[in-house]
Image 1: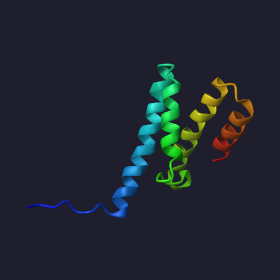
Image 2: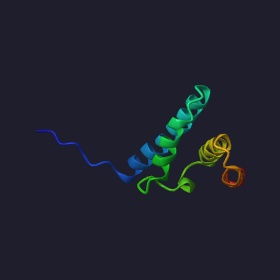
Image 3: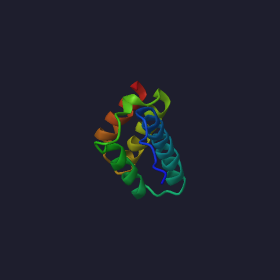
Image 4: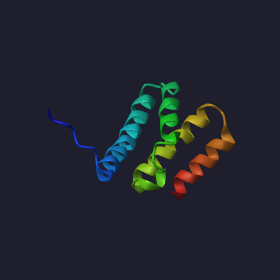
Length: 92
């Protein structure tokens, strides 16, 4: 009987980095489809405690990720929160 080895911490880090990359691509697709409702599911998955902090990801993905929730907040007319999110994205 063959047993699968436990993934190493390096492999898990690679998988989670790939997850944020995929989430950013999904944001782009949802924006093209004008389906902002599905974007909240992505935001909730990143806000989950099991997801690594955004600072652990490459700067480009960190900034791109924060840009999309900021735009969604603008569409929801939550201007103050959108401004805060977009400012964080530009400073990230």
